[in-house]
Length: 205
Ligand code: JB3
Image (cartoon, rainbow, N blue to C red; front, top):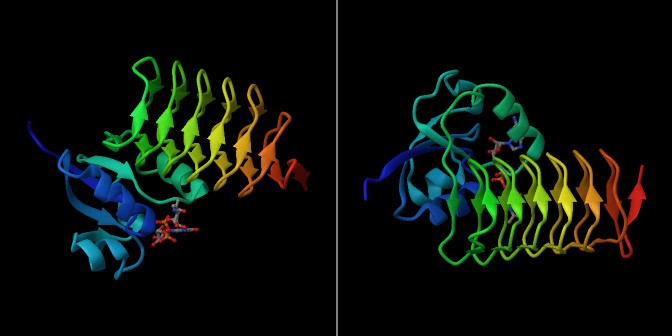
């Protein structure tokens, strides 16, 4: 199989995980990050191609977003990465149903599960061990953090962070640009832009 060259956008902790998951399915040809001594260079020896503001407006290589911050990811997608070709990866230990729909540039981490007829929007992160149950609908640039669980038929709007180890009951609708705090248990719908913390989940202004 021909190996594709991929440029990673970010060279921090998230990029380490993405680079390892790429494994033999793609060759990391370099990365952009503001830190000259970013972990991706220090630990794996990959070449830093420049800071984030040096990403060429019409980057020709395949890229993969590898920073965790959702606002930064959104700015990059609205800017230099707008029309670029994107690469996605599902780790070999993840379980993705054949009936699920997975968008472009999505990262599905080790031991994550995406069940029957779920759909995952472009550039989403389904992080380590997260569970996305049947028929969930996840928007673009959603991050389901490690160990979070979405029950069946949950919907999550774009640019929302579903925090570490949180739980969302079946059928709940979460809006755009929300933050679900680590360990929260979300039992009712969440409006756009809200932050929810605690058990049961409460909205914080
Ligand atoms: O929790 C887990 C499993 N992973 C986290 C991941 C989802 O997010 C991980 O532990 C980190 O907390 C975070 O990973 P990331 O994005 O690799 O972290 P960090 O090393 O802080 O950021 C990587 C690069 O993004 C930095 O070197 C900067 O170049 C850039 N960056 C991060 N925040 C930023 C900002 N750049 C700008 N301009 N503005 C920011 O706010």
